[in-house]
Length: 395
Image 1: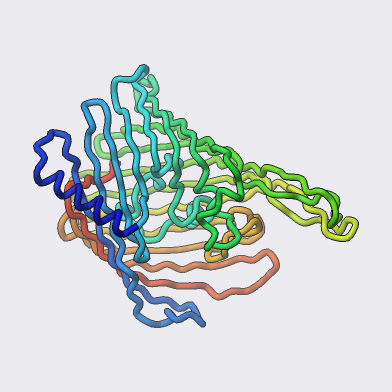
Image 2: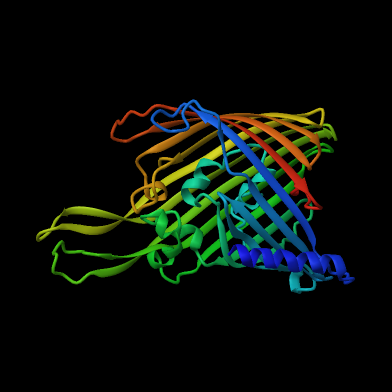
């Protein structure tokens, strides 16, 4: 893999240096360095200053022609390269002012998911994203159709997408080492994703965006012993899910030096899960049951003097953060909950090119069976830099 990447970068360098074509791509590099300490007992990081392996994102994007655009994002995380995004978009020239995106991309479910972590005000991924979308967020292969709706007094947009479903399957493989074989857990079953969003100018300095999101499909396929007989023939069943979500973002910006942002999202999870019932002939009967769970977050961030920001976030979700994925944990858990309170201070000496963040996160856990577990506090110092023309994310 590393040799392929080196060759790819070499070709890009030669192309950018010698080609006189007017479609040369923009190339940007985002670097992230972090150090942390925590109070989690019986862990090697407890009470120590721990340096994480630096991460990197290489962005390559540009117009293919006046009507279409392409983007690639190669990430280095944990010392390994992987392709985070690669997609093309048709931006104009289609009927009904439709836009089409196809490839591997951050799916438009909610607002935060489509924004890369380096552009977040906070440091850690929201809890319910970790539980219901996985550690990389809702990142999938598919095609998305986007429409601007004919609303006169405000801007509205409708996105409809069909995805492979890899992100959903990754949240429940039994062994993380089997992550590359997650397709075996759900077969070839595309999922559907949609989002309706509206943008309002409340006054000269205040804007509001609200959105409704949904996703539906098969999250797993497995064999059930429906009679509780070890000699019986197994019945293969598809387990389906439905996500319904709401999001909002309120931003007050009276001048270029000051901004106040209040933002939140929520998700309702309805899905069929695998459960074991009473003993049948000689083993427990395996059944499919429906569960309902939810998660959400809300945060406030205040930017002042253009270079400083301070903020706080409250998170909650069903599922225990840190559990291994399985058919009874994380997105399939409707019994146990994780709560989080976090805060941060940011310093941006040069806008959009360099950032320092100091964050504090406190996790608390609530188990349905009454199990007691100490809160977990982590303090993180992060530095980010942006080299190249990679632009800030909109609103």
